[in-house]
Length: 239
Image 1 (spheres, helix red, strand yellow):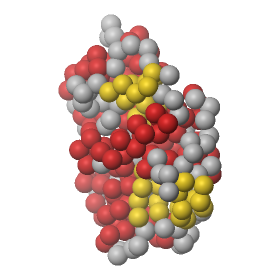
Image 2 (cartoon, one colour):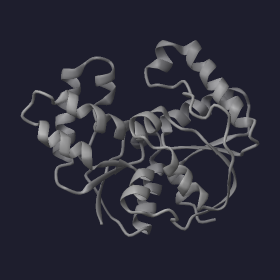
Image 3 (cartoon, one colour):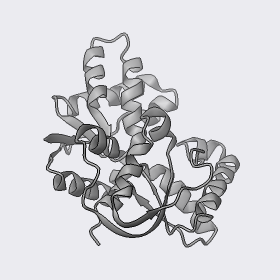
Image 4 (cartoon, one colour):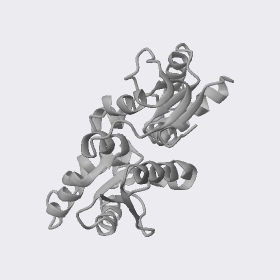
């Protein structure tokens, strides 16, 4: 199966290894991965800040960059959720509405794609360690993704998944929320890391590196031994 790869700004600039590991997983399960080097942002930051006109110009480019009929796969539930849920609203009175809707229907977060499109639960990964899983708000509430990552993790050899308390509670990042409401954001992150540490896990796994960056900052401040990993990093592991 041919898939187009969408790498969000966050991954591209700060965590490129996540993108490489996602490619590794997709190729391992038989996909032919295409990457358009001209791709940029999905338009979410400007949209969330209220600059819809500026966002639309970025989204126009996204539609051009990802034209065609191939599935679009991304290592970010946040960006995937934005394209799925808000492109239709942004292009509601536009001649591009049909293109926007068709593009929205083709984009998938990695775990959602593996489980619900390819029908693959076991990617042949091996990862020795105890992990706990963080449901990002975007994955849970915008992509309706909850069981998919857990199903994939349950098939990883050597991995023990331990659920934390209040697992569906936000980590406190929320993009600009962490900047505008820093004290609240830090308190939420502290609660999340406290619950994660109480499981005795060694790693916190998620579908979104934005959440994991915030969580990692809180862990570092607390001098915790917990480490963060994207789901793709675990699924790409072979030892």
